[in-house]
Each structure stands twice: as structure tokens, then as C-alpha cells.
Image (tube, rainbow, N blue to C red; front, side):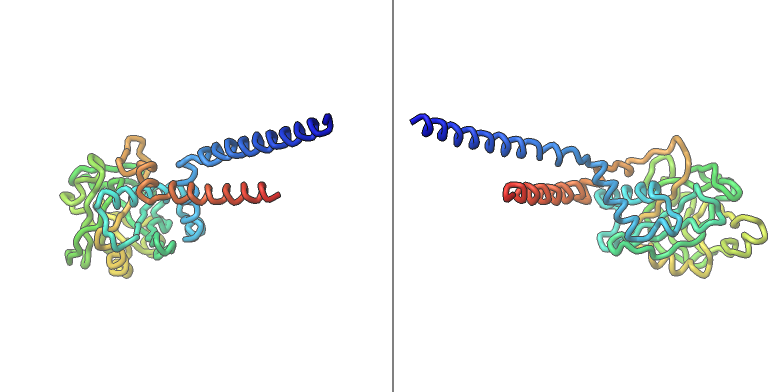
Length: 271
């Protein structure tokens, strides 16, 4: 009788231990999911895109790329961009004019389409861009997000109108006739002669032999992001939480994480 009681107690003790272990495993697994912040999920998504498109090799700063992609998703969410294109263009004015500081990227294909020179405004600086303005006749470049508009033929040949999306920073772009166009001063010859690229009246000018290709690629409501150092610059389109939500990045990654944890838990139970 005593053996029977001890045996039953042992079975109950083992059962209770298994229940506690199972309960702890269930409880412990939950914080693992939520400890992965939305910020880190979004940063990982950006890093994967950056790596797949081999952008580090081309010299594009990943922080600048992240800003551009964030703006792209928020502009998409706002209905400002074409639903048929996944093109982003980035002009990084923190880099010298002698470097190829314009990148055109297809996000869906994770491919760098073009990396070339782009000019800044006459009064924005010499080789480096240090001053920016949204004022007419300032002959300075303007920072921020633009959406490409109509194609037309002007004094520089085939050109592309731009609409500035950031109030107070580039929303006068159309009034100022800030457009993408070709210019002979965007060339290796100018760099050799002056030690810098030629400068525009504020337009993101490109080499004339590439102007047609650039315009054809980015026309039709795609985003152009002009980056530069200005402590005062802000944009509603740099909200990473909204961008991640629109792209469905957090939901997808957490779902994948849940599947991995569930699989690991089943293996533990099997053992």
C-alpha cells in the first residue's frame, strides 16, 4: 500500500513538473517575439535590400538609403506615387560633386539601375554642397522628397519637371523651374578642368548623354530624394513606423518569427 501511494505521488509530481515546464516554455516564448522591436525589423529589411542591390559597393550610405526608402513607402501610402513603378532616385549632396552621387534603384527587383554624377546649385557650394534654399532665384539646391512630373522639351532639351513634397524646404520647386535636365558641365572634362563638377541654377542636372535614360527611367510619379546636411530639415515622410506598417514588414517578420518559435517548441516537446 505504501509503495502504491509513493508511486502515485511520484507520477503526480512528474506530471506537475511537466505542466510547470510547459507553462514556463509558453510564457518564456512570448517575450522573445515582442523583444524584436519594429525598428529593428525595419532596419533588417532595409539592410537586406541594401545588400541585395549591392549598394555598399557603389558608395551609397545605408542611412541615406533608409531615409529614401522610408519616404518612398510613405509617399506610396499617401497616393503620391505610381502604383506601377518601384523606382527610387537618391542624390546625396553630402558627397563631393566629383563622386557619382546619384543612384537610381528598382526596389522590387532589388537592382541598382544607374549610378552617375549630378550637379548642385551655383550658390549651394563649390565641390561640396553646404547651403540649401527653397527661395526663387537663390540658385541653390533644395533638400527633400520630390515626385517626378511631366516630360517636356526646353532650352536644355528633354527635361523632367519635379514637384517638391516637403513644405518650406522644396515645395517651390515647380515655381522655381527646378527640373531634371542634361548639361554639358556634368562631365569628367569639367572635373579635370575645375577640380569639381559644373553647377546649375538649383536643378539636379545630369550628363547630357544620360539625360534621356535618366528621364525615361524615373518619369511618371516616382520619388527623388535629395539628401544633405541641414539640422533644420524635417519631413513628414521620414516616419519609419508608418513606412513599416504600409510595407507590412513588421507583420510579415513577426509571423515568420512565430513560425520559427513554434517549430522550435515542437522540437523541444519531441525531445
